[in-house]
Length: 179
Image (cartoon, rainbow, N blue to C red):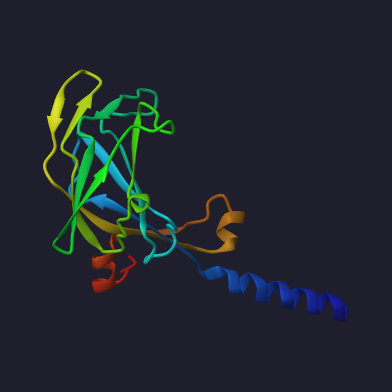
C-alpha cells in the first residue's frame, strides 16, 4: 500500500512540474506583408534570441499548397544595412536551391546579425511568368513565436496551447498579455 501511495505522489509531482512547458522560436520577417514574395530569416538556433542569422529563405508569395511558383533573383548580390554599415553579399544559385525557394547564406559570408531589425536590398526578382519586379528595401524585424502548454495537453487531443506571435521589441516592451 505504501508503494502505491509513493508512486501516486511522484506521478502528481512529475505532471505538475510539466504543466508549464513554454517554447520560444525566433525568426526575421518583413514588417509589412508583401504579396509578391515571402522572405524569412532563419537563425542558427531558432530557440535562442541571441543566435546569429544564418540564411534567408525567399519564395513567391503566390505559392499555395498544391501550386508552386518559381522565383529567380536577377542580381548576383544583395545589400544589407545594419548599424549604419553596408554589407554586400554575393549570391549564386546553389545545388541545394530548388526552383520554389532561394536560399541566401548570410553568416557564411561573414555578416553576423543578432540585431532586432535591419534593411535588405534584394534588387530585382523574376517570377515564373517572366515578369521582373524591382523590390523596395525590405525592413526585417526579429519576431518571436511562443507556445505555452503542458504535457497533459499533448495527451489530450483537445488540449489547448496558448500562442503568442509578435516582434521581439513589442514582447520586451509589453510582455505577453493573455486573454
